[in-house]
Image 1 (cartoon, rainbow, N blue to C red):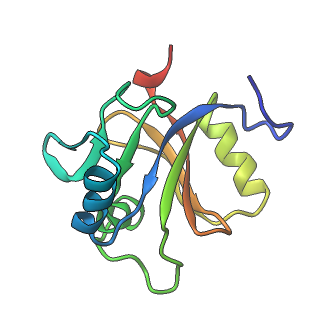
Image 2 (image 1 turned 30 degrees about the vertical axis):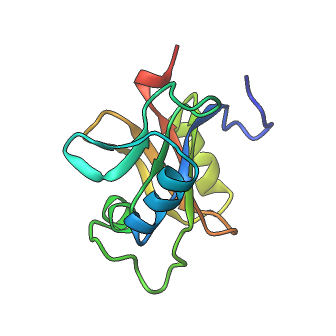
Amino acid sequence: MDFSPTGLDVLFIAGFGPVPNNVEASKTLYQGALGLPLKGMEGNEDYLVVEHGALEGAKHFALWPLHQAAESCFGTPHWPADIPVPQSWIEFEVQDIASATQVLKDKGYRLLIENRLEPWGQSITRYLSAEGMLVGLSITPWMRD
């Protein structure tokens, strides 16, 4: 279902979560106080995720450490001083990543990543919203029916 007349063709929210600078403090809140069943991903124990289907309403919920978000966007574990530090991330699954990316470019958004294929098989375009949220448009093959 296309939720907007812009041509982005958003299908669903693929994932959401905070971008902690201090993973242990965030883990204390989300796992300790809220009781979320967070687990480190194999090979990346700092990326704490609630496994698929374990939290109703979320296809993917994870604490994405700031240093990993910076590495993904800029190739360095340090977030650039001239760009606001994101407090959270959200990814919207789109029908066509190339056309969705072009819509954002045509509207003048500053893209941090353009239609990049990640090693785990996800295609992603990222930008920082006016609210300071790291927003992604993605194609995540294993989340599609």
